[in-house]
Amino acid sequence: MTKKEITNRELEERYQSGTLRLSQEKNDFLLPQVLEFIDTKKWINLHPEYQRRLVWDRTKRSLFIESLLMNIPVPPIFLLEWEYSRYEVMDGQQRLSTIADFYGNRFRLAGLEKWSELNGRTYTECPPIIQRGLDRRRISAVVLLAESLEAEDNKKLDVRRMVFERLNTGGQNLNAQELRNSVYMGKFSELLIKLAGNDVFDDLWEIPRYSDHIRGTHVSATLANNALFKRMRDCEIVLRFFAFRKKSNIRGSVRSILDRTMSENKDIGGAEAEELKEIFVSRIDLCKEIFGDKAFRLKDEKGKYQLSQPLYDATMIAVDRLFSKKTELVMNRDRIAGALTAAATHEDNYELIVARPNTSDSIRQRLDLVENVFRDCL
Image (cartoon, rainbow, N blue to C red; front, side, top):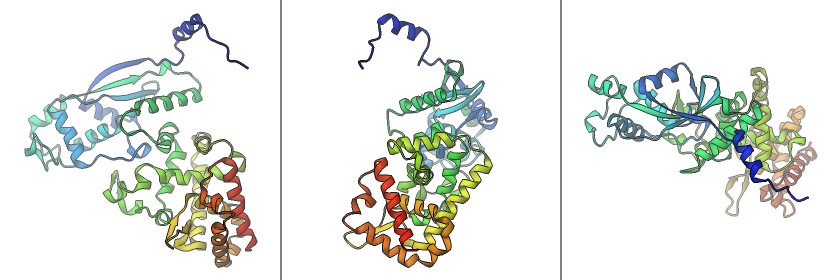
């Protein structure tokens, strides 16, 4: 069937109706106003963990404060009026967090070039005239207005996704999981972050433990530079377990499977989040109990064990499906480990398990194959 060609008149009517056209306004805010909006949570989503984790170091934060002090123009922040008079920060989290942390004396200036005399000082240690000078500085904000959004929640999510994608066409774009955590904020996205910080999960995936490397809002350089943590791939690995648990959900592209899981679970309650947490933690613990430090690993050509995400998917789902047989699984762990290695390295299965194919069909086959390996050992 050929697509009906739209007329110029219909295009004009569509444009005049406001469809897919956002209303916006521009405002300038004094830094003390910015602090008030942050403190009263009128502006939300300030934490970098909800999006990318490319956290500014102290020198970059200090140079931003120096730019404000010198009244050098800085890029505007973008706010989305998600509910009336409540705003979500779509772009500018690092700048706003830097302002809040400096005024809160949570870091000392370092690496300043034009105002090197201020290096080593917090806000309260700066002379009063410097403090007053900063208080007079302004941040520009572009506000996308709520009345221009469709009423339905799914339409609002579409707008949020579109805005995030368009705002990040320059520089380093948000990857798929960074975008998901931005679009589908809620208890489920928070749960993924918490589970990515589980000690057993971190150890098995060779991620520096969150518990050792995060203090309040400070993330150590060791963790911040970890490849899985830095771009939220650790959260995506956790998400894959929940996405593949339900057989009927394995359809379409992997990206659509993961997106759908985030969307469907966005508004879960506290009790459901706690239940999902217990499920994940018990399954990752069981994998550790069966396979030890070699969980989710296969030997490469040099005999070195390498982590495999597809093997992780299949192993976690196998122990989930057979969790009622936990005692038998542990008793037969040596057999299971040997049988899984043999199956994964067999020429008939290697491509499927190690995983170049990543279609929904190949995922279903991989999960079933590893489950059957486990069953045959019981």
